[in-house]
Image 1 (cartoon, rainbow, N blue to C red):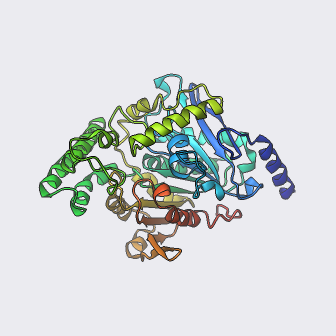
Image 2: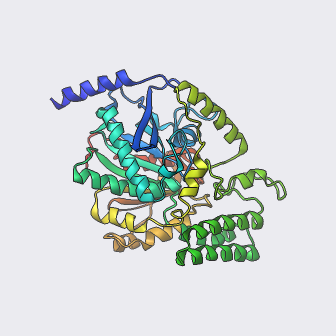
Image 3: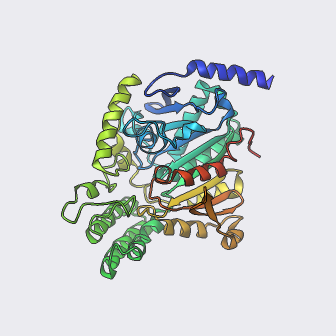
Length: 439
């Protein structure tokens, strides 16, 4: 009977697949997660099999907050088409079903009817996400039993770990049915103060600043921490932005997402300045103006192809502003709870060339976690990641927690090092084994 039910659900899924934008079978829609708050999702069915439900369902969450998964994550990182609308060799849809979600409300094609419906805390974002999944599973019940994973990048990592916690709570309470297995936190904004404090030593170590530059950045970063410790959270966010401008001055226009990226010389600051996420001016992780222009054109075409009446990204700045008090807060306690009290697998991965979420800060955060595996984590080995005979990085794994150091990658690991990202996905999803279940 279970097999018959799976076949019926698969046939229903195939009948629901639509030709939207591009040639992949896909579907999309909205879920009203609260009165006046509407979240947009865009599903790509995997090309690995016609029995979609046999393969995992993977949600991708962008950062910001206010950056669009359906835009940047889809076309610049891991979707079936790249920014030139050419087929992407390393698209995740070759292995799994990919669900891009414009999150939080107000991001991308998601929208709030008024700013009062925008979220102000990470917990609210997580609760909205669970409501989104309730609506999605109603629309696509063939995925209820599919292994489900939440993968993310940057601020998306801060959101993802709490989404995992809240979703697990809902599953245990019986308010939602989901075969939820794990989360992936890519270059995650999980402990902002620690990350900011590590900017100065990282810049000095790679030669981007001298000792005087280090001291200037360190002083600005320390002021960010002082404001946070005083409970002045919004002011700490503003000082974070100020610290970024000190870096731009001292490092002469370094790229925050890939320190090896060619940049304009000092005095030609347009591209580099736009790469900073400043308070009140946040849309997508901006790598270069050319990419931004391509994405704007693509998303205008997507709006028409999918029959949408929402201007993509119109509320992104408002999303960031309403979260400015929550922006610098960490999710350490949430992570410890997930590791101690759930069966959720947690994969943390970080590009070695990332500045804004630097690996040194992530390692400090992980080493300082207080959970049942703390003692084992302190002495665990760190073998190299070998893919096709190439060292793509390093890994440390204890229980359900894994850290992956990724070579030759900046902030956008899926785009910068697809081979390492594939290795990480295979650890998280047990090599895409459709029989994996929650214990």
